[in-house]
Image (cartoon, rainbow, N blue to C red; front, side, top):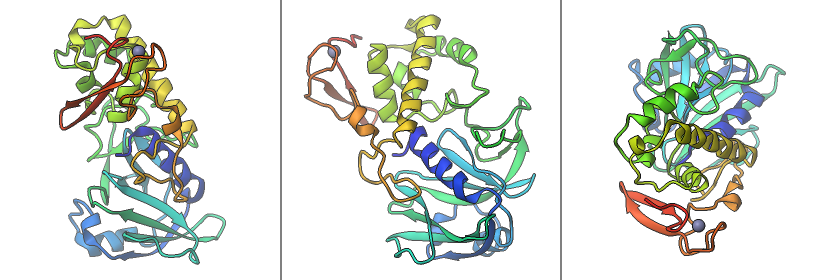
Length: 298
Ligand SMILES: [Zn+2]
Protein backbone atom coordinates (compact mmCIF):
# COMPACT_ATOMS: atom_id res chain seq x y z
CA UNK A 1 0.00 0.00 0.00
CA UNK A 2 1.48 3.37 -0.96
CA UNK A 3 2.71 5.41 2.01
CA UNK A 4 4.09 8.94 2.16
CA UNK A 5 7.25 8.39 0.03
CA UNK A 6 5.30 6.73 -2.76
CA UNK A 7 2.57 9.39 -2.76
CA UNK A 8 5.21 12.14 -2.59
CA UNK A 9 6.98 10.65 -5.61
CA UNK A 10 3.68 10.78 -7.49
CA UNK A 11 3.02 14.34 -6.27
CA UNK A 12 6.41 15.57 -7.46
CA UNK A 13 5.93 13.84 -10.82
CA UNK A 14 2.53 15.44 -11.29
CA UNK A 15 3.81 18.86 -10.22
CA UNK A 16 6.49 18.68 -12.88
CA UNK A 17 3.87 18.53 -15.62
CA UNK A 18 0.57 19.80 -14.34
CA UNK A 19 1.00 23.14 -12.59
CA UNK A 20 -1.12 25.60 -14.55
CA UNK A 21 -2.20 22.85 -17.00
CA UNK A 22 -5.73 23.22 -18.36
CA UNK A 23 -8.19 20.32 -18.45
CA UNK A 24 -9.48 19.74 -22.00
CA UNK A 25 -11.74 16.73 -21.46
CA UNK A 26 -12.34 13.66 -19.31
CA UNK A 27 -13.09 10.01 -20.07
CA UNK A 28 -14.51 7.82 -17.32
CA UNK A 29 -14.53 4.09 -17.96
CA UNK A 30 -15.29 3.06 -14.39
CA UNK A 31 -17.33 5.41 -12.22
CA UNK A 32 -16.39 3.39 -9.11
CA UNK A 33 -13.11 5.34 -9.13
CA UNK A 34 -15.04 8.56 -8.50
CA UNK A 35 -15.59 8.76 -4.76
CA UNK A 36 -18.07 10.87 -2.84
CA UNK A 37 -18.88 13.13 -5.78
CA UNK A 38 -22.22 14.51 -4.73
CA UNK A 39 -22.81 15.96 -8.21
CA UNK A 40 -22.30 12.51 -9.79
CA UNK A 41 -20.25 11.60 -12.84
CA UNK A 42 -21.61 14.41 -14.99
CA UNK A 43 -21.00 16.93 -12.24
CA UNK A 44 -17.40 15.76 -11.96
CA UNK A 45 -16.88 16.10 -15.73
CA UNK A 46 -18.64 19.46 -15.97
CA UNK A 47 -16.72 21.03 -13.13
CA UNK A 48 -13.30 19.75 -14.11
CA UNK A 49 -13.52 20.44 -17.84
CA UNK A 50 -11.95 23.79 -18.71
CA UNK A 51 -10.48 24.32 -15.25
CA UNK A 52 -6.81 25.11 -14.56
CA UNK A 53 -4.83 22.95 -12.12
CA UNK A 54 -3.12 25.42 -9.79
CA UNK A 55 -0.66 23.27 -7.83
CA UNK A 56 -0.16 19.72 -6.52
CA UNK A 57 -0.30 19.51 -2.74
CA UNK A 58 0.09 16.48 -0.44
CA UNK A 59 -0.71 15.76 3.17
CA UNK A 60 0.07 12.23 4.37
CA UNK A 61 -1.20 9.89 1.68
CA UNK A 62 -3.66 12.39 0.15
CA UNK A 63 -3.03 14.55 -2.93
CA UNK A 64 -5.01 17.49 -4.18
CA UNK A 65 -4.89 19.90 -7.08
CA UNK A 66 -6.62 23.21 -6.33
CA UNK A 67 -8.88 24.28 -9.19
CA UNK A 68 -9.70 27.62 -7.62
CA UNK A 69 -9.62 29.11 -4.14
CA UNK A 70 -12.65 27.06 -3.14
CA UNK A 71 -12.52 23.70 -4.93
CA UNK A 72 -9.91 21.01 -5.55
CA UNK A 73 -9.46 17.71 -7.35
CA UNK A 74 -8.52 15.20 -4.63
CA UNK A 75 -6.78 11.87 -5.25
CA UNK A 76 -6.02 8.88 -3.05
CA UNK A 77 -4.12 5.81 -4.29
CA UNK A 78 -5.73 3.40 -1.82
CA UNK A 79 -4.12 -0.05 -2.08
CA UNK A 80 -3.20 -0.22 -5.74
CA UNK A 81 -3.93 3.14 -7.38
CA UNK A 82 -1.52 4.68 -9.88
CA UNK A 83 -1.62 8.12 -11.44
CA UNK A 84 0.28 8.00 -14.71
CA UNK A 85 1.19 10.94 -16.93
CA UNK A 86 1.31 9.80 -20.55
CA UNK A 87 1.66 11.37 -23.97
CA UNK A 88 -1.36 10.71 -26.21
CA UNK A 89 0.56 8.19 -28.35
CA UNK A 90 1.52 6.05 -25.33
CA UNK A 91 0.03 2.53 -25.34
CA UNK A 92 -3.12 2.10 -23.23
CA UNK A 93 -2.51 1.16 -19.59
CA UNK A 94 -4.57 -1.82 -18.36
CA UNK A 95 -7.16 -1.03 -15.68
CA UNK A 96 -7.31 2.68 -16.52
CA UNK A 97 -10.48 3.93 -14.82
CA UNK A 98 -10.35 7.65 -15.55
CA UNK A 99 -8.40 9.74 -18.06
CA UNK A 100 -8.05 13.49 -17.63
CA UNK A 101 -6.83 15.10 -20.84
CA UNK A 102 -4.85 18.28 -20.23
CA UNK A 103 -2.86 20.88 -22.07
CA UNK A 104 0.24 21.90 -20.13
CA UNK A 105 1.29 25.50 -19.61
CA UNK A 106 3.76 24.98 -22.49
CA UNK A 107 0.91 23.81 -24.75
CA UNK A 108 1.74 20.09 -24.72
CA UNK A 109 -1.19 17.63 -24.68
CA UNK A 110 -0.91 15.02 -21.89
CA UNK A 111 -3.13 12.37 -20.35
CA UNK A 112 -3.45 11.82 -16.61
CA UNK A 113 -4.46 8.18 -16.32
CA UNK A 114 -5.93 6.96 -13.06
CA UNK A 115 -5.22 3.23 -12.96
CA UNK A 116 -6.52 1.08 -10.11
CA UNK A 117 -6.70 -2.69 -9.91
CA UNK A 118 -8.50 -3.04 -6.60
CA UNK A 119 -10.60 0.15 -6.63
CA UNK A 120 -9.80 1.29 -3.09
CA UNK A 121 -8.35 4.53 -4.45
CA UNK A 122 -10.25 7.26 -6.17
CA UNK A 123 -10.73 10.82 -7.35
CA UNK A 124 -13.21 13.41 -6.18
CA UNK A 125 -13.86 17.12 -6.34
CA UNK A 126 -14.16 18.66 -2.92
CA UNK A 127 -14.56 22.02 -1.17
CA UNK A 128 -11.51 23.74 0.23
CA UNK A 129 -11.90 25.04 3.78
CA UNK A 130 -9.49 27.18 5.83
CA UNK A 131 -6.95 25.25 7.93
CA UNK A 132 -7.71 25.56 11.68
CA UNK A 133 -4.21 26.97 12.38
CA UNK A 134 -4.26 29.30 9.39
CA UNK A 135 -1.01 27.81 8.05
CA UNK A 136 -0.25 26.27 4.65
CA UNK A 137 -2.24 23.06 4.28
CA UNK A 138 0.41 20.59 3.16
CA UNK A 139 3.58 19.72 1.30
CA UNK A 140 4.14 21.56 -1.96
CA UNK A 141 7.75 22.74 -2.25
CA UNK A 142 7.24 24.40 -5.64
CA UNK A 143 5.02 27.01 -4.01
CA UNK A 144 3.92 27.42 -0.38
CA UNK A 145 0.59 25.60 -0.07
CA UNK A 146 -2.41 27.86 0.47
CA UNK A 147 -4.01 27.71 3.91
CA UNK A 148 -7.07 25.85 2.64
CA UNK A 149 -7.59 22.09 2.74
CA UNK A 150 -10.12 19.71 1.16
CA UNK A 151 -12.84 18.91 3.71
CA UNK A 152 -12.21 15.17 3.25
CA UNK A 153 -8.54 15.62 4.23
CA UNK A 154 -9.07 18.06 7.10
CA UNK A 155 -9.13 15.31 9.78
CA UNK A 156 -5.71 14.01 8.67
CA UNK A 157 -2.84 15.26 10.82
CA UNK A 158 0.18 17.00 9.33
CA UNK A 159 2.88 14.58 8.19
CA UNK A 160 6.55 14.45 9.11
CA UNK A 161 7.69 16.28 5.98
CA UNK A 162 5.13 19.07 6.35
CA UNK A 163 6.92 22.40 6.97
CA UNK A 164 4.43 23.11 9.77
CA UNK A 165 4.69 19.71 11.48
CA UNK A 166 5.11 20.32 15.23
CA UNK A 167 7.32 17.46 16.49
CA UNK A 168 7.32 18.72 20.07
CA UNK A 169 3.51 18.81 20.32
CA UNK A 170 3.14 15.39 18.67
CA UNK A 171 5.77 13.83 20.98
CA UNK A 172 3.86 15.10 24.02
CA UNK A 173 0.64 13.53 22.68
CA UNK A 174 2.48 10.25 22.05
CA UNK A 175 3.57 10.00 25.70
CA UNK A 176 -0.12 10.03 26.67
CA UNK A 177 -1.17 7.11 24.45
CA UNK A 178 -1.50 3.73 26.11
CA UNK A 179 -1.63 1.82 22.83
CA UNK A 180 1.32 0.10 21.18
CA UNK A 181 3.90 2.45 19.69
CA UNK A 182 3.35 1.02 16.20
CA UNK A 183 -0.38 1.71 16.41
CA UNK A 184 0.46 5.28 17.41
CA UNK A 185 2.81 5.68 14.43
CA UNK A 186 0.02 4.49 12.13
CA UNK A 187 -2.57 6.87 13.63
CA UNK A 188 -3.23 9.27 10.74
CA UNK A 189 -5.03 11.66 13.09
CA UNK A 190 -1.85 12.13 15.13
CA UNK A 191 0.81 12.15 12.41
CA UNK A 192 0.16 11.04 8.85
CA UNK A 193 1.87 9.26 5.98
CA UNK A 194 3.36 6.28 7.83
CA UNK A 195 2.08 2.78 7.05
CA UNK A 196 3.34 -0.71 7.76
CA UNK A 197 6.64 -0.51 5.86
CA UNK A 198 7.95 2.75 7.29
CA UNK A 199 6.65 2.00 10.79
CA UNK A 200 8.65 -1.25 10.90
CA UNK A 201 11.73 0.49 9.47
CA UNK A 202 11.56 3.42 11.91
CA UNK A 203 11.05 1.15 14.94
CA UNK A 204 14.01 -1.02 13.89
CA UNK A 205 16.24 2.05 13.60
CA UNK A 206 15.01 3.39 16.97
CA UNK A 207 15.43 -0.09 18.57
CA UNK A 208 11.83 -0.07 19.81
CA UNK A 209 9.53 -3.11 19.97
CA UNK A 210 6.33 -2.54 18.00
CA UNK A 211 4.07 -3.55 20.89
CA UNK A 212 5.66 -1.36 23.56
CA UNK A 213 3.04 0.98 25.05
CA UNK A 214 3.71 4.54 23.82
CA UNK A 215 3.05 5.88 27.33
CA UNK A 216 6.04 3.89 28.62
CA UNK A 217 8.41 5.72 26.23
CA UNK A 218 9.92 9.09 27.22
CA UNK A 219 9.18 12.29 25.32
CA UNK A 220 12.85 12.50 24.40
CA UNK A 221 12.73 9.01 22.85
CA UNK A 222 9.51 9.89 20.98
CA UNK A 223 11.24 12.95 19.55
CA UNK A 224 14.13 10.74 18.49
CA UNK A 225 11.71 8.29 16.86
CA UNK A 226 9.98 11.15 15.00
CA UNK A 227 13.34 12.39 13.69
CA UNK A 228 14.33 8.86 12.64
CA UNK A 229 10.99 8.32 10.89
CA UNK A 230 11.29 11.65 9.06
CA UNK A 231 14.77 10.67 7.89
CA UNK A 232 13.53 7.26 6.67
CA UNK A 233 10.75 8.99 4.73
CA UNK A 234 13.19 11.50 3.19
CA UNK A 235 15.56 8.71 2.13
CA UNK A 236 12.68 6.72 0.66
CA UNK A 237 11.47 9.77 -1.29
CA UNK A 238 15.01 10.15 -2.65
CA UNK A 239 14.79 6.58 -3.99
CA UNK A 240 11.34 6.99 -5.46
CA UNK A 241 9.57 4.97 -2.74
CA UNK A 242 9.19 1.24 -2.19
CA UNK A 243 7.59 -1.01 -4.80
CA UNK A 244 7.26 -4.04 -2.59
CA UNK A 245 4.22 -5.63 -4.18
CA UNK A 246 4.82 -4.24 -7.70
CA UNK A 247 1.54 -2.32 -7.45
CA UNK A 248 3.07 1.05 -6.77
CA UNK A 249 4.51 3.00 -9.73
CA UNK A 250 5.55 6.61 -10.23
CA UNK A 251 3.86 8.85 -12.85
CA UNK A 252 6.07 7.31 -15.56
CA UNK A 253 5.05 3.77 -14.58
CA UNK A 254 8.42 3.02 -12.96
CA UNK A 255 9.05 1.25 -9.63
CA UNK A 256 10.83 2.86 -6.69
CA UNK A 257 13.95 1.20 -5.36
CA UNK A 258 13.95 1.88 -1.60
CA UNK A 259 13.19 -1.86 -1.13
CA UNK A 260 16.96 -2.36 -1.47
CA UNK A 261 17.47 -0.25 1.67
CA UNK A 262 14.96 -2.02 3.93
CA UNK A 263 16.31 -3.32 7.25
CA UNK A 264 13.25 -5.01 8.77
CA UNK A 265 10.16 -4.96 6.55
CA UNK A 266 9.97 -8.11 4.45
CA UNK A 267 13.32 -9.35 5.80
CA UNK A 268 11.90 -12.29 7.79
CA UNK A 269 14.60 -14.87 8.58
CA UNK A 270 17.45 -12.72 7.25
CA UNK A 271 20.15 -11.59 9.70
CA UNK A 272 19.62 -8.26 11.45
CA UNK A 273 22.09 -5.80 9.92
CA UNK A 274 23.07 -4.66 13.45
CA UNK A 275 23.42 -7.86 15.45
CA UNK A 276 22.99 -10.81 13.07
CA UNK A 277 19.91 -12.25 14.81
CA UNK A 278 17.26 -13.39 12.28
CA UNK A 279 14.49 -10.80 11.73
CA UNK A 280 11.17 -12.08 13.01
CA UNK A 281 7.67 -11.48 11.67
CA UNK A 282 4.65 -11.62 13.96
CA UNK A 283 1.00 -11.34 12.95
CA UNK A 284 -0.28 -7.99 14.16
CA UNK A 285 -3.52 -6.11 13.47
CA UNK A 286 -4.34 -8.04 10.26
CA UNK A 287 -0.82 -7.55 8.95
CA UNK A 288 2.70 -8.36 10.06
CA UNK A 289 5.30 -6.69 12.18
CA UNK A 290 8.95 -7.25 11.34
CA UNK A 291 11.53 -6.71 14.05
CA UNK A 292 14.81 -7.93 15.54
CA UNK A 293 14.09 -9.95 18.71
CA UNK A 294 17.49 -8.94 20.13
CA UNK A 295 17.71 -5.20 19.27
CA UNK A 296 13.99 -4.51 19.81
CA UNK A 297 12.99 -5.96 23.17
CA UNK A 298 9.50 -5.33 24.44
ZN1 LIG B 1 19.38 -6.89 15.84
